[in-house]
Length: 140
Image 1 (tube, rainbow, N blue to C red):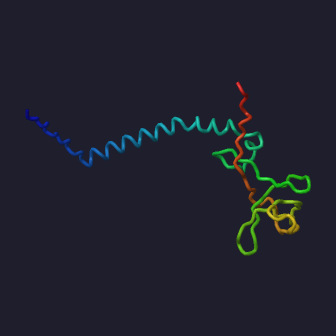
Image 2 (cartoon, rainbow, N blue to C red):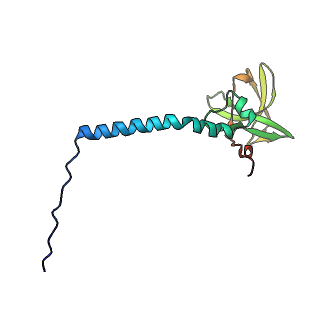
């Protein structure tokens, strides 16, 4: 018995214009879908933020973050990005603040003592850590 071979049918090649049309239509559809679903993403990230996170104008927008803190002598101190004389930036916990100068302590080496910084502390950027508030949802 002889086996007949099936003739191979070659698909006609897609022209470059057809390919570009498909890519364009798919891209537009994905963009419209993203715009349509964006409010759901915003609702999700807003739902897992605390009241402090919602009212902090400097907090990152897209994911819930809280200000980083360091416990020193029974006090919770906020951590700020402190510019150094050599141009680098260190994360330091603020112990005391006034309008013109502030005192900081290094959270990685608190035994080193306090560092005096000249300038308005409000110009410093706080350090944020991701902090989703899953307890906003009650257990069903």
